[in-house]
Image 1 (cartoon, rainbow, N blue to C red):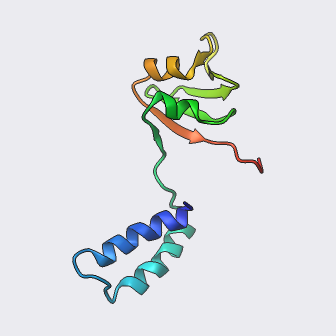
Image 2 (spheres, rainbow, N blue to C red):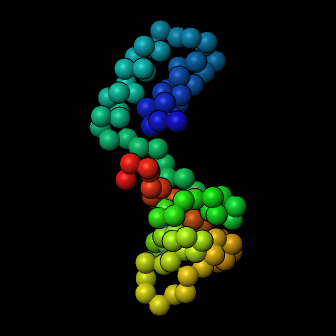
Length: 109
């Protein structure tokens, strides 16, 4: 789902809350474009399972609760800080309290 679709869905939910379709719906649709132009982006995705972490493609980057960045190379994750051993997805997920996805490579990249 694109950023525009995500935001439009939220605006539509507000415009229909308890009132069905309201006279504000056209305003909200126009506001979506203005908000996106101003730089809005959806919140970063949190990784909630080891399986979800393992499904990310190579070169993906996550940050742990301490703000340390980890990049996937093949089947292991390397910390941006020197000195730590590479970890498999299950090992990284087990040691981190929170993982936030910050980058997923695209085919165009």
